[in-house]
Image (cartoon, rainbow, N blue to C red; front, side):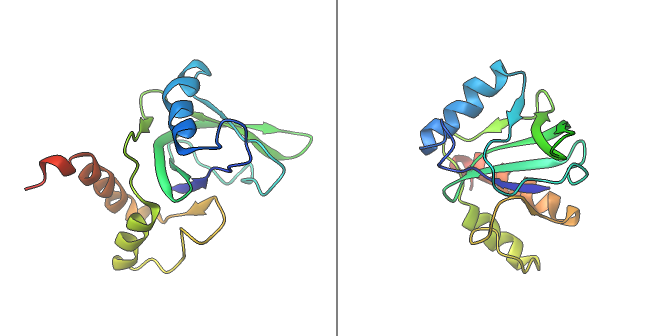
Length: 146
């Protein structure tokens, strides 16, 4: 499982609403292809597994989660240039949960690394995947929490 922090410097990601619109409307039109932009740090070609959960964050808010299908690699630069998301797994949050709230839940389960105050592409251990899924389910159903 990965945390991907979206950069405000990438066109279209200059606001939270812009990010949400991208994941709701543009990504389906692009056939679930998430292009990796910019010249900063990128994920290694062997660093992302098929069917891995990717959590997309913008400015401390989790705007989307999805599972990976496969990646596209630029052989000349030896880096990932796109993540193709598995069709039907993308979940966009109109009311995004906080990355800090997720970090707090995971700290209670023993995670010691920072998610909020670190760079993107953080790895969350697979044994915490159910806790993360439960966090998102609880967020989605918070209006019905008894």
